Length: 356
Image (cartoon, rainbow, N blue to C red):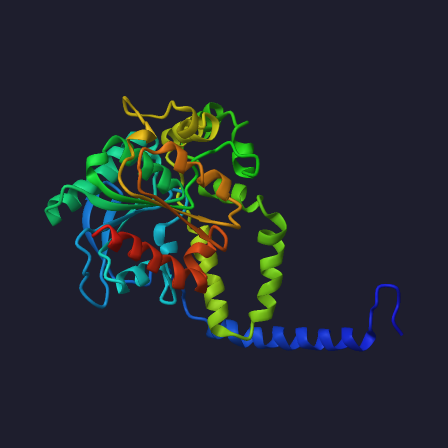
């Protein structure tokens, strides 16, 4: 007999039996699961400065692109979300299109890196990698792809050194940090960043991860682990889940001084919009970004909502500006099956149209 909540004893019994079967299968599956890692594509170290390493990805065929593409990722996670596994790799698909792809690995900052600044990350590390590529390839300028915070860094570098960037691509990159729908920004604007950094030194990775997880507590603390039960009898799906979990929690600490400067100038000062971003002794003016720009954002991004990325159009000096709106979220733009079909091809076609 059905009650006011429409419970059905037989349906509940069947669901309990199915759950028991899944859990039983899960015990066998977990015994068979292999060690998981991320970073599917072969890569070669080509340049290093301290803990920061520049890698060149090696595809199955030689690149046909005339200009290399350098990826600058955020500091808060390891950069291999763009190359998570064979069937979820933006890098692998870019290589298949003939691009010559490099990536900066920032490494794991320790106490000796406490006083690294934004100038170190932007001028010294990105600049050093770009100068290496320019020298190695005999070019005046290279293509630059900046992702999330790495996109903000790429915008700063392109504004300070426009002669060294041929084409600029920003992906899920915050530009206006004071939009109403940016929950993370609303939190950070009230942070006493001086007290925070002076107390902690480097910012612990666990603190950063907890902050990001609490933006979607039900989804990230409960729902995804409940959903794990549904795939316990699928070895490959479990390995995919564990690989993503490993990437999420394999996060570096943040160099304290660079964190302080980024929070002050970007999150609190909204410097791209209001001005006042200073790298070293030079102020960043986005009007000096006059090279072609492709701005890619995700429509369901809870970390960098589209409203935070779209203002780039009105701030740069380039007359060649394009947008790509992706139907997905901040992580889905790298790993979803739709992303594999849409994003690398769009990047390649955009670069190819500019003879790059």
